[in-house]
Image 1 (cartoon, rainbow, N blue to C red):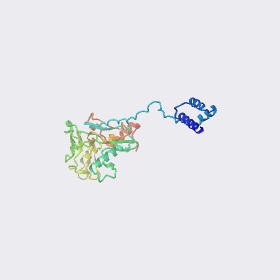
Image 2 (tube, rainbow, N blue to C red; image 1 turned 90 degrees about the horizontal axis):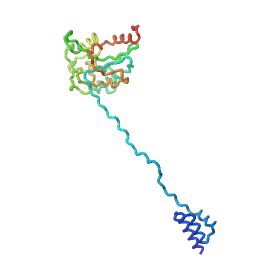
Image 3 (tube, helix red, strand yellow; image 1 turned 180 degrees about the vertical axis):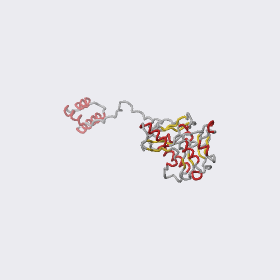
Image 4 (tube, rainbow, N blue to C red; image 1 turned 90 degrees about the vertical axis):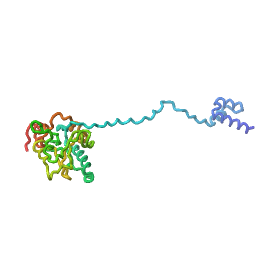
Length: 277
């Protein structure tokens, strides 16, 4: 009889554990079986409690993963004809990054093996120069002769070249990013170099600016080709207005000054007096 009572009480406890009956029903059924109320309450407390059911968390749904914003489209620069390089001495810091970009570009183009481990600024067509408290960016200004007075409208360097080695590359021709768009370049097969000629350098330095240089390996003439309308020096300049590629509004000879003359001019404008050397 006692064994049967224990079985019935165990079944009630299991039903209580599973949640099939409540605590009140367990106490009632236990007392009907002859168990005292106090003992029934003790048995109810000893019954294993049902495991809590997992309930879904109610709350805002987690944000759906969003794709990374697409990068802005790369705007391809267009080569520009009829422009020139101008620098602002009040903004230029003389950092030489324009010359480094130019030198690396042209040295790699003509002498990739000889210059793969060095940066030689002698290959640069643009040359920042430093004097007493003044920096000057020296580069070809694209001077032209005056036809009615001088008998030609060519560039002075082009006019005196005995080999016609200084040529103009028309739009649609040349190598993109290097030559073309109506800018000048050197035909290296025709150029005799500094050892045998040098006339372009002489006329440029004597009467105009000083935009001609010679490469340090073969000694052939170098002139700014404006990178075919996409000048690398402008892209390399960290100051937005220090070096600009602007439309050529007048004869470039009006901007052409030898570096020494530019030094004197800028020093006088900035400090209000001539340099005391």
